[in-house]
Length: 387
Ligand SMILES: Cc1cc2nc3c(=O)[nH]c(=O)nc-3n(C[C@H](O)[C@H](O)[C@H](O)COP(=O)(O)OP(=O)(O)OC[C@H]3O[C@@H](n4cnc5c(N)ncnc54)[C@H](O)[C@@H]3O)c2cc1C
Image 1 (cartoon, helix red, strand yellow):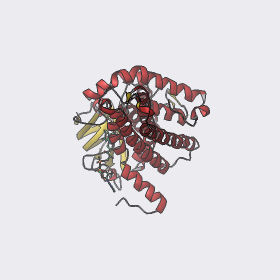
Image 2 (image 1 turned 90 degrees about the horizontal axis):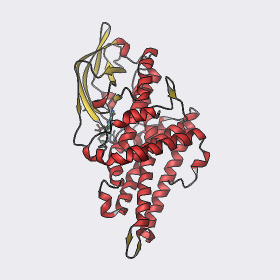
Image 3 (image 1 turned 90 degrees about the vertical axis):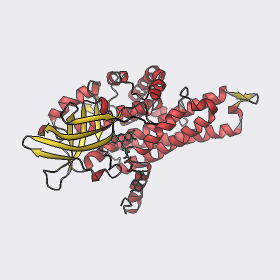
Image 4 (image 1 turned 135 degrees about the vertical axis):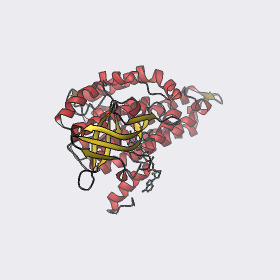
């Protein structure tokens, strides 16, 4: 596996162990089945409890049975999972960074005890519901409402593009609390067996096909007031979760690109045309050189982010730059790898076209490439170009 500037040398034993376990899991349990699931458009649900057994959900959190590994170890885990498929990494990211993290950071002790151990083992599955049919990038304009009624809240609204929701036990639904002054956005834990909640699978995706994507309506869904996340109010709630998840995505995209590079390198040395391996022609060598350079510089960026995160100095804008850069890199390099595989490269037998299609989703979700550009523009000028 390409590690051109020998980042491995600086890894701790724990980080190597997590990486090696994740790599082995992907080799033995993801690669053999993922192309078929991708073609079928299904998430491999048999992996859910295995990911839990291996401690791959939110391992960077502490307590409640979670292992508190370093941020580098967590990043390496995301990198290895996405080398398998973005759908598998997305499942683990949503569970860990978008559902367990807000419960961990903003939940009551009772909520933590109820959900974190079972979600850590993969016995319960979570989804994160921020996006609505009419409000994607501008999620702060959401229309979903939660109104206090005695000891309960009553939720009404629609959410779209909620990863894991068709297979979830609980959803973190972000909604306007119309009973509080200023109608702040708050997080509500909604069990999926509540009356009035109707979840549909989104079919017809041509990207991230090995992932369970859903949309749902809430028509008078009643939850006890104890299901509100008490520790946060306003958009900083969902945005702080997204910073956690985007950190994992920036690492994960490197894994997808690395897998494409390794496929292309192997193919280039095996495949012969005009009497010699295509890797012996300068045009193909130039592609490998560029791919390796882009992967290496993206790896350096996420390793630095891990250091800043450990020190508590990571800013959301740092994560925006890494998500923006690394996903664009993987999107571009997966296409070059696909090209190097010629006609065979358009089949599911090889991974680059699958990664290439996945990157269209990864480029769009968790803040589109454009939105991260605007976040950086605002950081550098002090002027917001959002509106
Ligand atoms: C497979 C998949 C899984 C997802 N999973 C989840 C999930 O689990 N939970 C969840 O809440 N959401 C999820 N999402 C939703 C995702 O976060 C949104 O798709 C994303 O935020 C973009 O919103 P949108 O699709 O409505 O596009 P829009 O916001 O309508 O954007 C359309 C285009 O306009 C551009 N644009 C928008 N605003 C501006 C601006 N101010 N300036 C310049 N250009 C602009 C965008 O960059 C984009 O190119 C998922 C999406 C997909 C595809």
